[in-house]
Image 1 (spheres, rainbow over the protein chains, first blue to last red):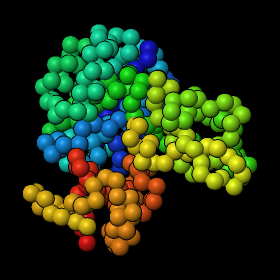
Image 2: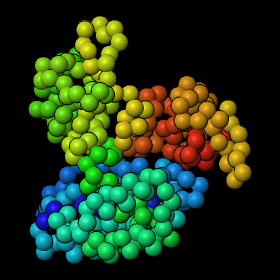
Image 3: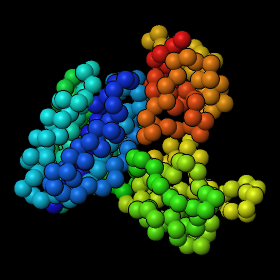
Image 4: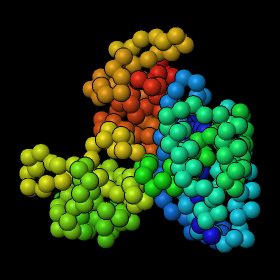
Length: 248
Length: 67
């Protein structure tokens, strides 16, 4: 069965980040042979004075394909893990959704989008999770992280939110590769410019040390922007970080 | 470059789009600490925008480790 696992509000300014904890949970799923996991996405939620986030209010989500028999043990492990590993003054939340058993996907996606715009309540999150048949639990502090954990699942399901954790490693001669080489060397699904068009296989791209992708149309997409006066005539380069931020 | 808000927090006056100002402020700051890779948003790595001790607000960020 395919599931989505999302955690939120696990850190403080000195502790491991929420992304690192999500990565550790995913690694445990793999090493325990419970199933296979996919890349983690980071989902930005509302930044507002009434929301008690640590520094950026984002949640971290990944998909896993597991044997049905491991669902309960996975949830129990993740819950214990959050109690053990979250920062003392954090308010961690855990959401685990079985994708094919979500009663109303559109409602969950709308909830995710609302969490980017409105201040939400825990009660609303729990009501929504119960109605849609999704596991939602809190593991310390005020448990406020359940809101972001549920929203993160909705946003991941939307297929059009967030940036992928980690950087892609690509080998290129003098840091120049074709779009086709990027696709063949990585799990990136498309190399796309800001106007929404995908590059052709032979289009050349100048790399840097910051090859990050975003979730668009359910795909892992590398966004590129035009170069200016490239010495080798390469037309495309990695998108500036601040544009990536605006996309995910 | 900074102002104090109603909560007593030190808030960056440049908002979220003053990359040069945020880099300049971080350059002078002994408490700067690069955040985890997931949260890096400014091309200039040594920037308050990339600092572990910034807390984003609707318009800008507050510094939680002032000098």
